[in-house]
Length: 179
Image (cartoon, rainbow, N blue to C red):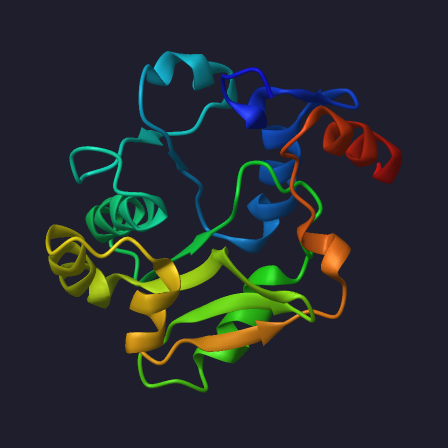
């Protein structure tokens, strides 16, 4: 996509990330953005920007851990994660994740469609953050390996297009048409 933050690309009258925020905001008590680098590029969003708490690029789990650490300081029991380049995820994402998590011992769930799991969309209990930190420090980088270890539930969604993400200029054109 030419570098930079995909979420800040224009989609319709706003950015991809603005669409994500608009979709997630009514489903949660508060929002924060996990991003590394200069946080001022997100000043217009009015959200706290939280950098990874593990040094180096440790992948998506490091971003989840940063969110869990932030949530712990807010007194929250869980966080929900959503990808910044996926503007059409379900409007009932959070209730479906909660229902799936209630069927597990860990209170953890990931979204899935017939095409497979979407591990960047999940409900994560703050109580597991120390275990996640230890796994990252030991070199674990695969979200699915960590979530499988904890018996994550699966919130199943019937429409693969709901988790369409923008990775290429053609994807951006497709997203424009989907609006």
